[in-house]
Image (tube, rainbow over all chains, first blue to last red; front, side, top):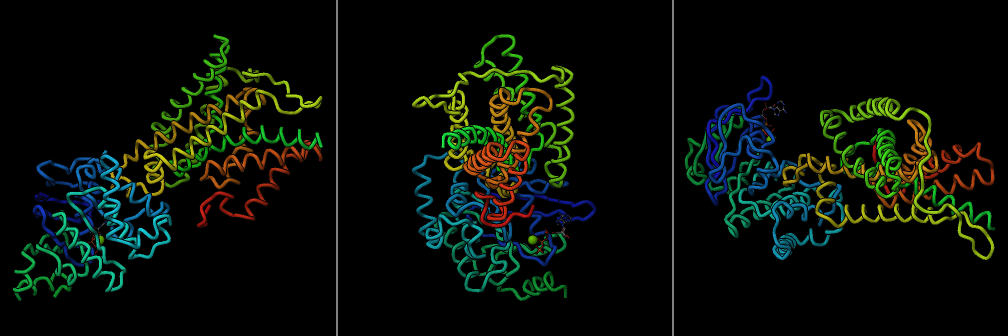
Length: 240
Length: 292
Ligand SMILES: Nc1ncnc2c1ncn2[C@@H]1O[C@H](COP(=O)(O)OP(=O)(O)OP(=O)(O)O)[C@@H](O)[C@H]1O
Ligand SMILES: [Mg+2]
């Protein structure tokens, strides 16, 4: 589904990603873990076209996307939720959601159903639909960002630290939502997290980055069962 | 009483003219978050295009059409050629580029059309209607002006509130990166914003020219009032532009009617100050404060 091969991304003289290869198979939840500065955000930005690779390739559903424009990549069905700022705060809740649905020309009937589904899943958004997104709490904004992404009917969802700054209960809610989205519609999810525990609780596959390199790429259940891998995970995070 | 009525009527017409300029500024601000200081120069250029067509063909409407078309083209060109390269830089860059454009366009216009002010015709009679033997300061042409501005305002409100393009434009202006991630072609919405502002500016120019005449710097005073109206209205809202324009137009009309025309610009200052003291981000501006 998503195939990243030998991807290198530089910011000037800083190498953020160093020959990264990974697969996110159709319908899986892959989580990308790693310490600060490991290159997780850069990985997502490269997929959605916001960061340009120095070398390597990214393919989605069989198409090369690494040289395409951000808007076009989004149009292929890739939704990217940047960390902590996934909504347009000046627009209302309803406008954010409508914007998500504008990505592909669909009949309005389909849009209405999508909208009902989102409001159904997140009743709080339904109550606040006329309010500007700036008036939502951090957790509510995160739900709105996910709802907006869903309105675009994405095939692949890239999430950058959706748990950032949220209370444990809200984190659990977000993770349950992701699991549900995944189970209901078989969407492919690439989830970047600092919060390894909650990410591991829903992931099928785990990729750990360290200083721009892939150091672990394993089945989530296998990783959890294997003390040596857990050791390596700790090492990648804590450096010992 | 008649005098008050007439001052009000004159103020409304003037205010609608200020409002068109304000609408053009709001259009660009909403679509691109840039205040287009070159709006006046651009208007002047497109009005000269209209004047030339009028001069050759004698048709007001053909001239209006050509001026509007020139506005669309000029807006597009300015965005693509001058604004795009500085778009990602600090906001001051766009202002500096706009100042450069003013100089460039003024020089161009002086070269082609000279610097003597030219008269610009009106499409309808300037004779005021008379009601019960009292002549009003409201002519068929004033009604035309008011109608055009009201139409433009309504069209803009509908564009921003009701259409997909309007939503995309606002999204692209507020948050370009997020908008692109949601599939909005932000480059295109910026260009469309400038093109539409060029169009509105062209309309403003053609409506103003008969009053102030047409020359490289004939529009300056009225331009200042247009900016003032936009700021009173909050820079964000088409309705705000028109309300700001009307407030300003009527105040100026009363001030010059009752206190003398020497103090009109003081009147403008007073309206601006009072409005901004009441609501610092403009009467129809965002509720959250804007840092200027
Ligand atoms: N715009 C930029 N300019 C220069 N260097 C950058 C830029 N963005 C990221 N970097 C560098 O690239 C490396 C990877 O950054 P990235 O943001 O991808 O890390 P991350 O894994 O998302 O970290 P965090 O967990 O803190 O979000 C870091 O060394 C960072 O300093
Ligand atoms: Mg990051």
